[in-house]
Length: 213
Image (cartoon, rainbow, N blue to C red; front, side):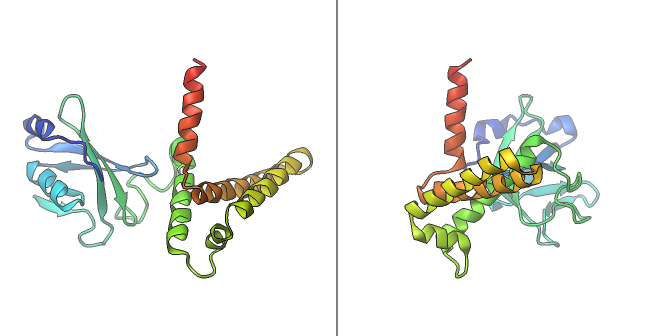
């Protein structure tokens, strides 16, 4: 965890503009989804940085409140940044359950609102594969594949790639999607087996794109 808000930035935060409060946008550290909007005074910010859990100032109760203090659905702090005017904070956090009191994953509902959010499940799936690799639970297909080694992983990716190709020329769209899902999953496992990640692949794609501009 690396909080990028520096002491110099903290000292220039303009709490006075909002009557002692700063608006705080909270974003999911994994998916990028906007989770909620809250407010902090200087004490709430200090408590957030100290506890590594997001603490707000409740305007209705006129006191500090740690998100999840009654529900258990805390926001684990990942990062804090301020905007260019030093009067708004952006927090990235890991939610430990539904964020909204209504039970939805965000205060704006459950639906993924951006293309990036819809694709972000790949990152979540990658974290699941990573946990399986570390914990090796009994009965786990992922753990078994990893234990069988790189040759077996390479074989599975080859098989799934062939099935995608065959589906593309003679099957329904639903079949192409299903086979593509199998391929992506097995590719994630193969990458984990090599100690690599999707981020490594994305960096390569970004580098290729940059050279073609």
